[in-house]
Amino acid sequence: MLNNPSRPLAAIVGGSKVGDKMLLLENMINKVDKLLIGGAMANSFVYNLYGTPMGKSLLECDENAIKVCKEVVE
Image 1 (tube, one colour):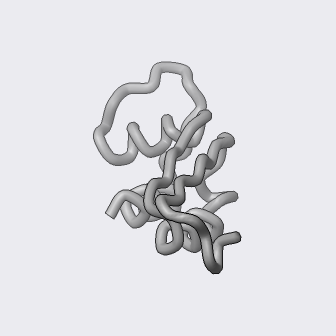
Image 2 (cartoon, one colour):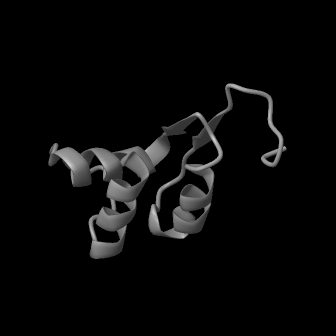
């Protein structure tokens, strides 16, 4: 499906840990037209990119997560 998809192609990825899905995200960003991030993983993107407080919400903010968030958005 990812080798010859119908366009436009969007993917939705969710879950809690950016680090666990690092390879998946890096692979998908070059194959999809839109990548939607949901679940607790979205908290990590919002926090790491914009510094928005997340209260007690689950998020990852280690060096690896910050790197992945920035690469995916770029």
